[in-house]
Length: 87
Ligand code: FES
Image 1: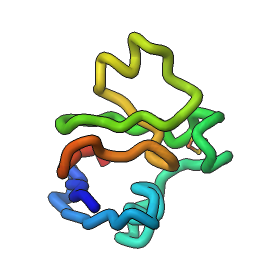
Image 2: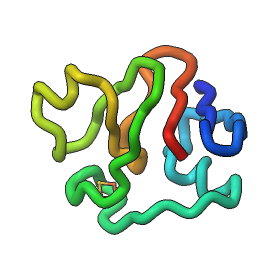
Image 3: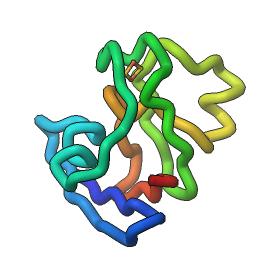
Image 4: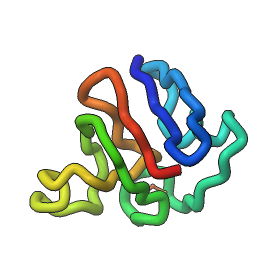
């Protein structure tokens, strides 16, 4: 379980283990473009303003993962206890 803050609205969400960030964001009424929802298409790529990312997608390369400023919110998660997204 970790917290996600949506920077544009200041909304704070709790993401439990059995829920994706994408689901939590959509439950909060924020719509995001998605397609595969399996971490392979890149459609849901979201800018990350702060926080450590646990990358679980097959889209980003090593350099992009290391940069830590973007993520696929359908599958990837937080490594720490908080992420701030540009949503
Ligand atoms: Fe395809 Fe997230 S919807 S990578």
